[in-house]
Image 1 (cartoon, rainbow, N blue to C red):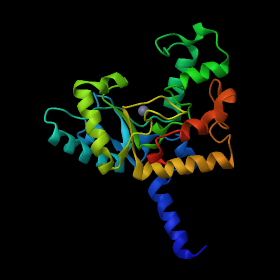
Image 2 (cartoon, helix red, strand yellow):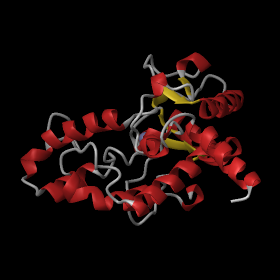
Image 3 (spheres, rainbow, N blue to C red):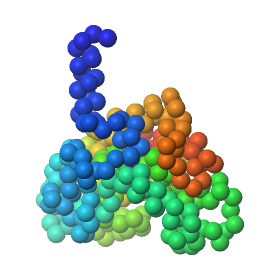
Length: 244
Ligand SMILES: [Zn+2]
């Protein structure tokens, strides 16, 4: 490989992953609070509802600019970040709680439905990712204001969503889970992604999966993983085509 190209690729990798292993990074096996690539969202002045949350420094810088522009256009309103980076272990807690019935799925204990492990997984996958497959692992994706699509169809929520669909891309932000896709997660009007970084993490996740389709489960697993892990690339790739 020519030296110039080698340097370019090394620099890109350094910029994306720092000292972290790329496979571990895209599957969420690291602690964002310990990484110099990440920073606290609340420290930037963005509202988080009091929750300690972390995002990539680049994501936060763009989010601060976007929030300022939104507030200028809509005095009295602001973007509230309610969930940010969740690593493999955070995602596994959510997954296992839904799997064992301690956290409701569509308002009920999923184990009351007597489903097969595969069917049970499909229900959870309407909105929750399998550990190792979430865009929330990447430090580029976050949820704003409400985890209900209905919130964004009237009042302040509609003002925010309309503004986001018209302006967020100017700051690098896109909605991966739009309406009208024919596979993957349901529509999520609250979930936004900082594409200048997430497009690389997406490409690398798909590349690692192609070279070893067990990379997301081979060292650490979770309930239903064997029945469901082969669906992972469908959920990862069934996104708004603007995000690919
Ligand atoms: Zn989300």
